[in-house]
Amino acid sequence: MEEIFKDIRRYIDSQREPMLALWEELVNTESGSRQLEGVEAVCNILRRELEGAGAKTRVIPMENAGGVLVAEWNADSPNAPLLFIGHMDTVFKEGAARDNPFRIDENGYAHGPGVLDMKAGLVIAVYAIKALAELGFTARPIKCIFAGDEENLHMFSDAKQAMQAEAVGALAAFNFETGYMDNRFVVGRKGGGPVKLTVHGTASHSGIAPEKGRSAILEAAHKIVALEACNDFARGRLINCGKISGGMGENTIPDLCTINIGIRFPTTEIKNEIMEALEQATAHSTVPDTWAELDTSRLMNCMDTTDGVMALFGHLKRTATTCGFGEIDCFQVGGLSDSGITVACGVPTVCGMGARGEGNHTPDEYAEVESLFQRCILAACAAFSLKDDFADQ
Image 1 (cartoon, one colour):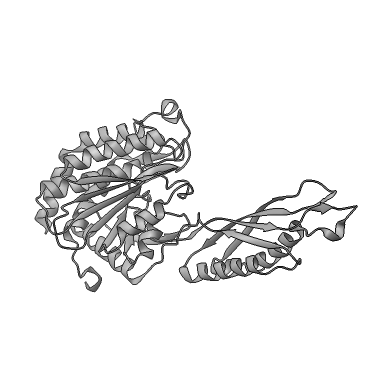
Image 2 (cartoon, helix red, strand yellow):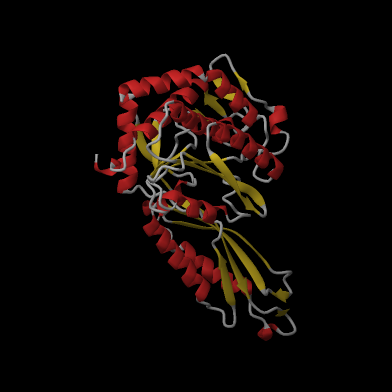
């Protein structure tokens, strides 16, 4: 196996210039979540590269967002696939690449919008597959699932459902999100996101016929008190009623009030507790003749730290030592990612496989260039040596 790993290293070392060129092309192709033409352009670049490596590609279109790119390499293998997952969009507005184009400074750091989150990770995933193709690897399929709207939590699309359907039955997954500077890889992430609770009442003139009104704002106040009482910060259970809106003026009893709520949860168990509290608050009314509706469509699953996740990290850790990458560790983080989708499907996942760097979502975002090559070698070696019984090793 060590000889194979040396061959992988030699191949990646020979591809440094093409990898940097692809990275530059992706970063300078703007793809903010609402820049649908830009997301499509990034998708087409990736299709070109992956098809050149022998993958079959298809796009699952989304009506109001960038599509989901699916690429299947070595699809004729009867074994369960290894997933490479990530996203093609960024948080940046139009013009960001013009003002802050891709460049590498004298310290070996690359700059530009999305250079770290996560266009470096896309380059790593593509060239890990190219390395496997160069070595004639046929043990299992590699399946890429790249979303077009991860940065806005898939709020305008059905991408979560599409990704879930594509992930079912896979052996394991690597997510090429941002890598951390201390070489810790992510084995757990909080879930959460925005929730909207809309309360309906009956409007009436507050002076002429107050008895005919049913105040949606008053009912919302009762619901807010009940929900905030459910917080348990020590366990990571967070329900934040962060914004309320409703009513038309002080002389009208309000018939509508909307509560925008942010929730966070570290485990599926705590998510279920929060969902129960939200559903109870929605169903129960203190003010007679009021009713409410709940929208949780924008929630992201947490990435539970399952036994399978830790077994996959164990494989990655052994590979890192054998292939010369060095010692690595793991941890849990608060940020959301699509790793929650795959873990919820029963697919062990390790996240943070992308290049190392800092400053995500800011104009100062940067990535360590050397880590682009190091992480690609690690990913290819880990894919090559992954066995069906990795959980028992």
